[in-house]
Length: 359
Ligand code: PMP
Image (cartoon, rainbow, N blue to C red):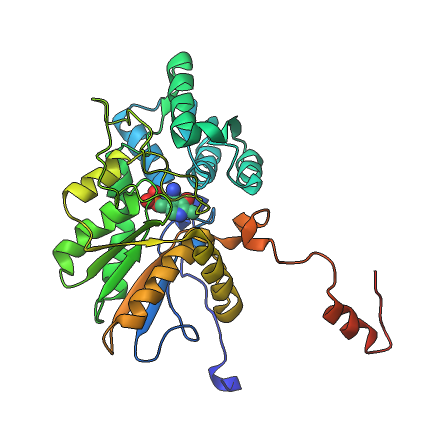
């Protein structure tokens, strides 16, 4: 790139009235060095959302809809069970709009998540990891009932898939309007991203194959076991195919109602399991080889997208979701091999010129 065509910017053309107005419109970015020849691979980088994940969209949607239909009163406390990103998104939305927030979360999720929520004013009530997703879910229900709080219900509310229909899907349709789009690849936590985007793709891009992934050691959908459910759509049992897995934000130990609707409507074409360590490996490769910093679920989704890319026909175009930022995983196995102190090689570099310091 010469000086004439160097990177320049000119602002977004308007001022923003609130941090919440910056949610969505995340970029689809081409993968240049890792993609196999002859295939175009793009990632939809949800870490461009202001609180760093795809769940900012859902948090805004739940609070906006509840304000509009009157189920959330001014100043009422909001409560939700979350593996972290919904809580961080809700903490941002509640801080910006002035609602108190209480989050219930299993103690197995990264400590960065707790701190980020507390930084934005939320209170975080931990639940034991042995009680899995259902444990934190039940605690949120208990707290809501005991205190008359507003329960956000991300696993059951229609506001979840709806926001992805109205935003995530519209962005994909717009960005790929004049392009092939042969495959769209995603994982699931609540299933909101899948349900919302897939509904739109099925209508407007019926040729696009929808590929869904789940952890290899927790194949809730792959097992075929039907989730027992109460009349209010909430899960009635811990799913027997669940095992703790390292892909934070992916499946809890039950099939959420939001996901079940997508399954019933046949909103995916292929289900490909992925091992947690592969998610870690690919998140590292994305960081090191493309400069794209995403979490383990992003790495896992990308691992599946690479499998598709390897076998796809020449000219195929693939889009892969990256749900959150890698910075949310500093205390986890994703960063385990990353040293804090200077390595031998770095110390040798320090010694190699006169101005050196070895700490
Ligand atoms: N990855 C991460 C890191 C997440 O936090 C979530 C949301 N739980 C997902 C993926 C899955 O998104 P969804 O809930 O829309 O299925």
